[in-house]
Length: 246
Image (cartoon, rainbow, N blue to C red; front, side):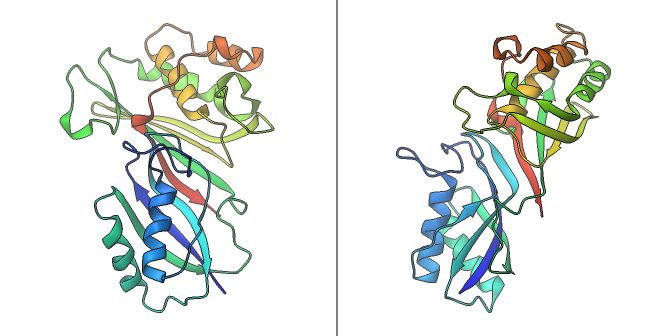
């Protein structure tokens, strides 16, 4: 038996998310179907974690086990991507791993990136790929506000009501706001995140950038642990799972 890790890019716009569900198209199901066709045996993949409906990935990680040994990786990638070419999904790398490697349970940290286009007009190049905010955001205030997310906190005020995680305490090891022309890039790094946590944090930063909140309000929202105090979550369009570290 062989164990392989795959790195996947996808646009999540037309999907219900990564995980297979009873209704709708998922990233996981499309990849499993493609792998099953190429390897000619039923394949089940384990993802590093879920991404919600509409969320994208540049470096999603998954693994699968099979009896087939992949000798020609380029041929394998071309064959699988042939079946994915119209699905806005691409497997960009395959690596043989030890048999006990698991894409979810072996994760050390994940890096998410959120993209905001802060301009007065729509960018046709970025429809469904970023959050268009027409009012000018105060980047300096956002940089002050994002610092309150760093560290270990109970993020229960920033989780979805449907989140199934047993422990709302998470440790944010990296949080940055960068500006490049009319593009604002927000980065968060942690071992794991609650459902909609990143989008909720971005929503809070938007309020700070609009001067609706003082930067210190973020600290208060975390401390009081009440979801109704949190800003509305940012739309999924601008969120990317950038990289998974092991």
